Length: 113
Image 1 (cartoon, one colour):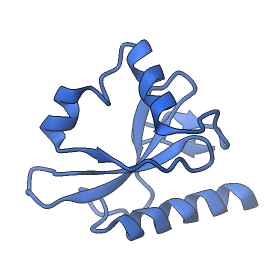
Image 2 (cartoon, rainbow, N blue to C red; image 1 turned 135 degrees about the vertical axis):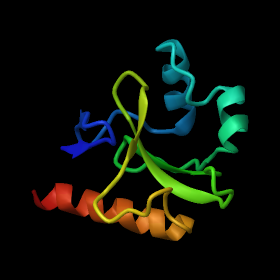
Image 3 (cartoon, rainbow, N blue to C red; image 1 turned 90 degrees about the vertical axis):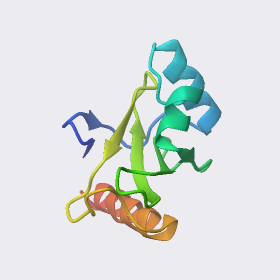
């Protein structure tokens, strides 16, 4: 199992096939990850690809003002939490490619575990 930033374990694979389904479940659960205000505040741009039925990458602008990319996991209820693998830069990855490579490494470890 992969753990999120706050230690929540998430099983691989997950139930999600597209970002819209995660977005809808997140709203139904009373969460605000994809609300227009949240997306605007963090200048968030979720990428549409879902990995292993649970993970996606988005880009955000942290306090230092430089866009970065982070890995997120959606649980079975649509709650979204950040995944921070060991060695991840403080505010996320500098490129989409780096974030996807890190996610691929996490998933590869899950397959061999």
